[in-house]
Length: 505
Image 1 (tube, rainbow, N blue to C red):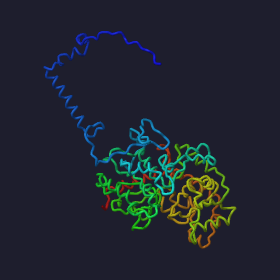
Image 2: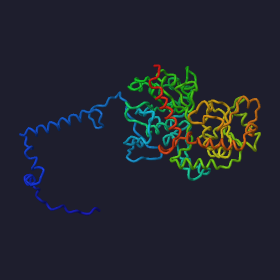
Image 3: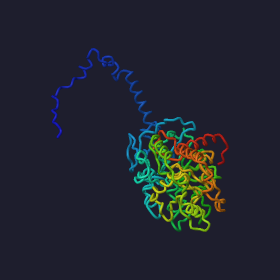
Image 4: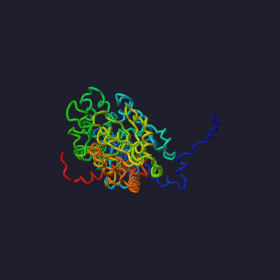
């Protein structure tokens, strides 16, 4: 029970005359001017009324009473990191939203980015509909924690305790969520579109089309519907029309070929081929090497350190790891004649003392069920075999390098012609290349690897470990220059360089 407080004894208030009559009161000085018959009184009131009128009519002030222009772009709210709730936030639809813009802690030599605030049908509603994004299973775990997924609790069995909290069951197609969250907290984000050199479109294109990619008898119209709606909305924004799209970019969370359908009945969406997408730059996990507007960025892995010390602990761990196997392969055959993966598996099985296999046949490696076995295999091997996946690239490249294992490539388009900004410029310094044609003609992978000295293997591993920060997406905006920072620097530098140059419409 609260204590009872007695009210103070009633006392009669002093009259204005008594207060004004005090010898040293300011009112004594002002009294001659407080009369409505004095002309200075009316002048003072007029000034106050004029200031009030200007205040109420100013459209740029946050508390203005003027109506907003619906065709003007609106800044997207800043949303906290997946596992960190920032001070001064509110919650809307379960999402933590900051009331203040991110602080620019570094200089932005190539300019700043404006993030469009799009209708929720293009992002938030797609996430809320996570149970229906895939025809076979729910995608809710995959899109949780802004694309990081659920914490990888079981990984603690094979990684040190001081880094186990940085691991998540991250889906390889979660790029759109990860980049959107980082863009909202980006040091070079601006809330003023007039000052921006680049405009980010936070549309979850890959998530929106996924259901229709794998639904039998889905029409081209269904696969294109979301992209067309996005472009219709974008047409109403003034800044896309000023630049014809040259300073706009979007994240597509799948490979480029999933958005390049050229005729009805073929695979994928035709989003990239739509005329209004022509000049918009796309960040993808695999690019079309001949398309200037495609930029390939690393696949998301499960490692998201929240500090530079956590990252360093992991690098020290993989550098000191004892590796008992010469090379390894994690994957499965594709079930057709002369399947290259089948050739690799046969070579591995013929060298049981040198090669270790993680069989991913069926669904053995889906949904993290074999993630520990795969990571442990990479941690124990000097080299990891990286053939092409369903397309030229595969996420396993980055899982392998993250474990400090040296990748062995068989197609140059698997890495060398994809991720130039994120990997060493000299391929031989961190990887081995054996042409797939030579392997098909009988070249022994083990014999090629046997020619590499232990000293060179050591140097190559050191280079792989040195580049780990460049191929991960950190759970922090401070202290780590990761794949996101490298991608944005490269993108903004490109936009800066093309200013003033020739641009087709």
